[in-house]
Length: 385
Ligand SMILES: NC(=O)c1ccc[n+]([C@@H]2O[C@H](COP(=O)([O-])OP(=O)(O)OC[C@H]3O[C@@H](n4cnc5c(N)ncnc54)[C@H](OP(=O)(O)O)[C@@H]3O)[C@@H](O)[C@H]2O)c1
Image (cartoon, rainbow, N blue to C red; front, side, top):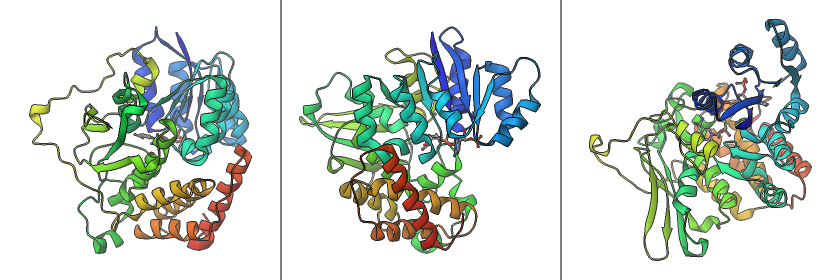
């Protein structure tokens, strides 16, 4: 029996995780759940999974949740303290890190420091603090399982192989909703256009990241830390069908790939049950029903965010955390209708131009770099969000 904490249970990954968990009551027990603002969904999850502890964003939300619950209530906490308590709960053996953005960093690292295995969806944890996080994973001897479908595919494609035989990791990208849009049309892209992803159903922030291709850039940095491979040997192929989830190329020219119907329940179930496999509810793949699988190089002229992520990875130190923070602010401004689509990458580039990278020796220093990136992005954009 695995005892789970799910950080971000009301999000897209959180809900898919609970779908998998619900199908295997003999394998999983839910110890703690955290949410942000979605009290209605959290209430339903509490009634279904009966966790001991839950946490929400604010004290007001915690009180409102408490008032809405009848019968035996879980302990209800709030804020960072609540997320840390959920991540480190003594009964928990595995934490699913599914909060969006740099907000996931503190509870995820708290889980690792408390010796919990982590199923990691929150890629921003590794983007902002990869060197510190991987050091903690080694020191605490915990397991870090990738939930991102690309990294789950790389993980599976590396199994049974020697790391010195790997020549390249190739992450696949759907290309998002704007794959075939010209620059001029992109200037006028609306929020609804950006949220209209062709293959994946995800939270709003990652869906916009997917449209700008910053998501793939964040994944390149995530892969650099997860698999200890230089970014120069991590490539990106556009693969609009999202059937091959990523590949590993070996020195003898062989390429190992993982294929499947695009559905996050697959990588989630694999992370929860590794090294076993269980039916995850993902539709079986029928290759004969596909008209073809295609691959091509990304266009960094129309999608400059991908190149910015490579630049941030090259600069290292505090630059990825600053880039990530600027991206979060710019995406929020775009979603709020305050800036246009192309202004997202322009703002990130300006913030990076203004930043002098420096060493980050602690999570507190990462958070300080994150705050600097947010402040500077707001100044650059002239927004107060
Ligand atoms: N969705 C996917 O298919 C997918 C695939 C691969 C990787 N990922 C990664 O997984 C993570 C989650 O993505 P998602 O699509 O599931 O996001 P999402 O649907 O937006 O859900 C985010 C979750 O985090 C909570 N949350 C948001 N801001 C918070 C804050 N400041 N403090 C505490 N909790 C907060 C939300 O709570 P409320 O909703 O209650 O406010 C929600 O439970 C991201 O890092 C993403 O890059 C997602």
